[in-house]
Image (cartoon, rainbow, N blue to C red; front, side, top):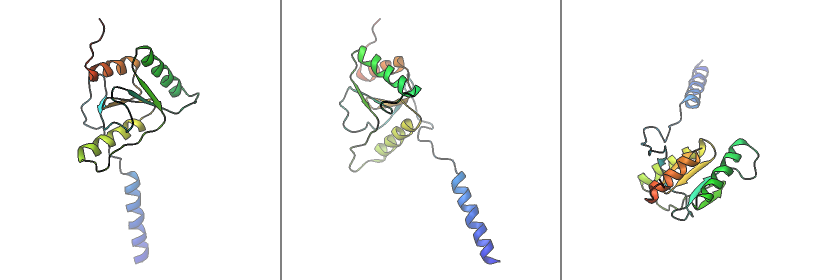
Length: 144
């Protein structure tokens, strides 16, 4: 009888862990006027370049949006780095850096393209949002 009780408690604990909602790293985080959130920038990205992440050579709608976005940024003279993954160059991260990394990963998990602009990121932004964020973070005025 005791074994059955222990087994039932173990199953209940396992079920509770499986059903426990994941912590949303973006909950309560203030966004920019363009909808981007502050993140830790992935390593190896030159300052002033926009990182656009999505699967390469994929015929999906997400990949097509990614290519269109990267093309529009390039036409606007904005340096674009296109990739399908990222890493962080942080040896001993501070709590603030860890929170920024968590937010960057959450943006990436929300779908392609994940766009990183000068310490800000957003999943599936429009070209207009990305250009506006780039100009805002670079201190460039929009052409009138």
